[in-house]
Image (tube, rainbow, N blue to C red):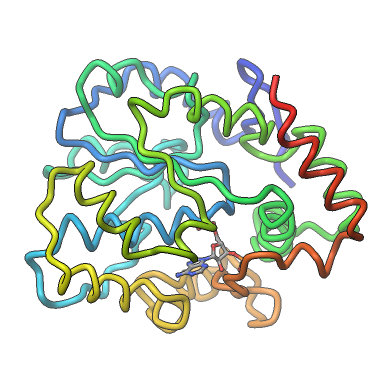
Length: 277
Ligand code: A3P
């Protein structure tokens, strides 16, 4: 079990602390060509990452087999084998970087360099359900409590990278600098999102290419694509070996919360999430 700490209001864990991660974050030197995909966990990060990857690498007609995790590494944790801080410094441009850090913990150089930051958010009720399943799935957590306990902890901001509301607010307050999209928009109008992302990143986009990216980023395609579906985590022992428990590409739906919350509980959590300080 990981021990959790609060660092400047945000829950981080033993790995971060032991690795001196906050110091690495501060010292990080961003480049103008860097592209960050930021999110609270389980908000559609992988979806937006793959979309961004496709937009940026549009000239490559062949799809890659290399897991997204390596093409688009997680910035936050330098010491853990899979989370490759050193590799990020050695990547060639344009570097595509994932982060779950809240706005206020991103390195200053991200903002001064002109790097591009995209943020994806999702209905907190669906985030909570997805996060619950994720914590059951990954062996670095192996959550076995009840959903109700998990929901309370989520609301109290005790999950990694919590609290949720402040995370979303931090980026939304800087929507002029950051391209904000939602999981629900990715469902309703993915072609529109692809075009917005392409424009934000200064990449040309034809209708034909937008359609190709639209196809490649469907849930069905991503679920069967080993380069993005995180099935390698099962082989690597990171995720539970049973498919039932271990599917990263779980349901991919809007509104799965109705299977976990009563209408009143759901309404209450949504209302709470809208009362941002
Ligand atoms: P569910 O657990 O609700 O299925 P993240 O990448 O931030 O960890 O978010 C994971 C969530 O996004 C999971 O939600 C996953 O199924 C969903 N997801 C990933 N790719 C998707 C896609 N192409 N279409 C719809 N949902 C997707």
